[in-house]
Length: 540
Image (cartoon, rainbow, N blue to C red):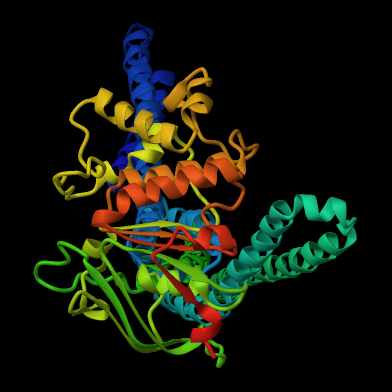
């Protein structure tokens, strides 16, 4: 890249020489020289813009790679990560951090190398004119990195505060957006305004302080440069009076001093960008260093026939309250289990433990005879379906959302009597299975009334499916996966009575080869289960 910069300077120099030659010499040679100059001028422009494009492309590639790594971390990091990391934290790393690192990228490094080259080349000419003045200016130049390092500590600290302030401000904005209806129905716009304003003003103050430190760093470098100029004039005046130098020599020294001024300012700017980028790199490193889910075991889980909780207790991080303790339960293939309990008695917590999302505080969970804590969770998750209280989907077609299981690295072959969970060899196989299952859940007519049928995109803002439809689609997605364990956390919420009956009829037809667990408050639905687990009794 530095070759580009040097070539631009050479072409510009050649152009200036050519212009000089065109003003002298014969009229006959001027057109030929002019024709030679114009292509070189064009080459000059082409090289400059090729350099700009190449540098910007490389910088953007670096930023894109950082954004991709941050995104991909979300797919491998341990589940505990999501309990303490806000979405705004992730957006910060995608936006501000990546941009700061990009700014201090190839372009800045090329400029830094070019500036250092100038500072290496010019001082020897100054030494050849006057050793004392040159050495003084060189010593002043050497002090620049130390000044930048001293201020750099404060710049880096302030940059971290700016990043945190931006994160808090974005979090408040996201909070207001998510609660747009609450703000209106409770008329609490002033509360939302004050909450955002506090973070907004805090961020403004941090940014102003950061800019002040940037200016201070540049001004200190200018002061050093000014001291160098003063040395030249004062020492030079003495040499003139002594008859050792002329005014022209002083002007030559000043010219050299001016030449090194821009590189010094450039180095100061690079120092500002460097310290900001270091804060951003530290921020991104903190996220990327979060532990991933570890692959455990040699073979993984091939079949889940039994789940056992052995003296399991659980409390959430940072809390001393035990949701439950000494919990002993066994779930077996071929049975349907209903979990009964009031809000806060641990039904959802139990399901998150059974799916491996949360880890027990006490005791062990066994998959067959193997401890879940020593199991390859990825292999276990392939065999688990979980319909959570709030159904979430990718912004993609219904079909793509319902066939996510076909993207697994390993899809088990279907067993006799179970036609779900198999890979789709043809497009019509996927549609056929979705049509069949949608009839069981009374979704067939609703989906086929849509213009794009299964290719209809699922949207969230505004929603194009009702809560009840989303629940039934979520049930379909998990049943189509063909898991050994099916867990439903209040899956019949927002579903009418007839469709609830259809749902439980479907569960009964699937129960022969599966462990099926669901939670409910409905007495009628409890009768559909083979066993009822009362959390109120277990948590006494």
